[in-house]
Length: 477
Image 1 (cartoon, rainbow, N blue to C red):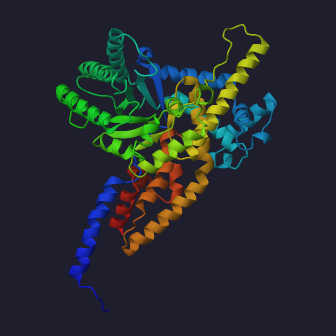
Image 2 (image 1 turned 45 degrees about the vertical axis):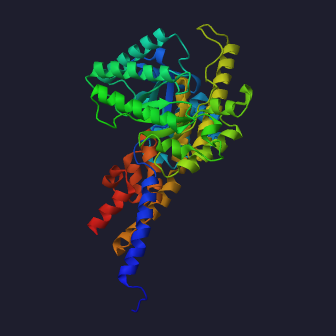
Image 3 (image 1 turned 180 degrees about the horizontal axis):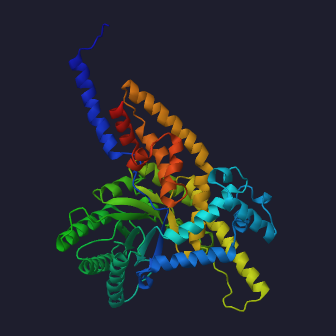
């Protein structure tokens, strides 16, 4: 075959392009395969105890079983698929539940009530096993501005409780601290609180941090605030004998200036770069952001259109970078207005209506986030946890069959490319499909065995990397 170009010219041409391609791949490596929690609970530092997450799980389970004692009630409140065909009489509900309990998983999946039954029982199991996935010991909005002596004392006590939780195994799988912002009037307080907290914690634990520990820096508007945090991290690591790079951080999208700067540009990538690789996530602050847009308090909700604009701008700016994105929080708490043991029927009914209304709002907010590709959000109260998992499990389970078909087809295409020796350059797309199942697996929506329907082996799934799956298959071929 006759060619016009000599090999030397072609090599020079493609080598030059290769440098640019590799630089792009370094900047945009694709979705990170690490576990991402489905939520973060923000709780005031003054209230944090070693067993806070365990107690929150108990409260959440009681809330669920009080206002939805069975799967039919929850399905009807949230209008889950096929809810209109479920029984209404208590005896009929009990009989249906017993019949479903006795079935094999495969047989149960053929029943119209399967989705509602599965969602409810997975919520109960999750609240018993791991109700809180991620927790922030909050020294910002959840704590407020208090005298310095009080915040100093609270920082020390909270660190001691975290150390106790580490020893007792009662912490959430992900945990961190939210300090005051690095605005001009709060920067010194933020630095001091983090210094006290980390110094106390490391002294209590012999120099160890909890797994997946992170520091949240709120209200970031300029790259210099991130740069200052990096410098602070380096000083704290050196002073406490930590390996350089140990401390990680998150930022918050809470102001219009982080979506568009004074030159009409989106500054998010510059802000992330300023963290020198230490920033792993960006969380959205619904109420600060809507306030910065001039939205009055009554209309500062998760469903306001300005939030979707900010979400999509954030996703466009940080898509493919591996930065985890989190939506904000629903501010309507599912707690009845009446307290006490001797409530009237009317008061009990009012409590139920109030809780169910709050449940529906939280469920729809979380579902909206998931549909828009935001797989994490905030929770502010343990009573919100059941709806976090209701929306999450319904989302994953109702999409499972379609996702299986898509990933199985993709795996087959990849296998053909591997066997023919071609470079399969859509590994990032494959990782995105794989991540659907990894996220579903991590939160308890599905089991490892249920991923096998995609054509992957259990060993391949456990690598959590589609690129490594391709490498492994190529090596075997």
